[in-house]
Image 1 (spheres, helix red, strand yellow):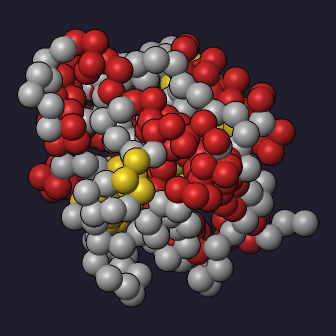
Image 2 (image 1 turned 180 degrees about the horizontal axis):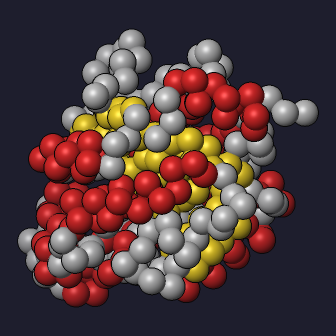
Length: 327
């Protein structure tokens, strides 16, 4: 089973070569794009401009500036208490999926609305459809169990003409399902992607939130519920599920075999390296034809996603001829 896609040449710890956020933030450029960001910018101890990454308002303003400057998204907002995604790392997932698709297409990245992705748990921020559509012109179906997230994502799309036709949201009414109830019989997807809930309980998720507060702000009092909710709490479905990441990904893999003919590549982020072995075991159980593990890195942080397909090489080429090369 092939579990590695060769890394791009470059220094360890760097973002994907096509990721526009591989350099330090240009706060002059970002403040020009979004003047409201300027009140959060200060000089760090090293003398460089930065923001307080433990301040949720500052982080949201940074995201708004990045989306406006690099992706022409003029309106972007999330409800209080919902996750605010780090855009550089999220963009890396999109660019490595583009590489995964190109590996079945003679090294050429497919672009345009012929390429359709399914974003499982699109969230209130709908960040992956934004990045995927603005970077490569892809279109997306986004699913979520939370109606507030669905409403927020739809509002973002509605408020930005550049996102017209880029995302269609669907409510998942059964939290014990991933693809069931979302993928329709006549549909096909070139890829799926997912940032799964990786905690197994609300208590575990709260511990993770406290760690983030300590690491970013070095605050002495990190147990204030209000501070936690404003910074990193997120909503339950965003952070945890019964059995944690391992159980969620297993559920996804088991369901994926029922939609084998309707999707070229299934993918999912895996935050815990120790979960890879049981994931490979499940993929072998469902007889996936090809499995890849793609590593991504940003500074000292290393992340990864697992990709699998039920199509052999000849069938993948046939898929491309049928769907990507049609007039």
